[in-house]
Length: 166
Image (cartoon, rainbow, N blue to C red; front, side):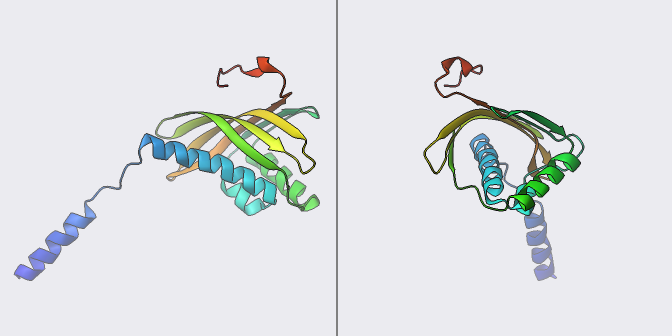
């Protein structure tokens, strides 16, 4: 009987232990890894992997501004479908390299906002730079991207820094 009570006590003790709450720095590193991982999945043209970083609701919003123009899409059905088609029609991985820097991260329990600078270097050495922001929501303890904005600009233009992060 004493053994039974001891086993019951030990079982109860282990079942009551709380999960470790991540520190603010751990959360920031997780958010950075999501942003970088999503970009790598995009470069690899791996649709399933890329889609795993995203929320799949009608609230998803993507905005891109570049020399080529302005594009905005709302809803996972348009964003996911457009990228799946793009990956199928252009299956070659992107061979450029990129560096994210100058992060500005805010988060709460279920919402996070990540702003950063992104510099790309193509195989021929051409460089492009952008300011990007990603909004994430927490779904079942996993962070998912719900909004992505990237605005390309000329690297020489020093008046772009509207967030005073440089």
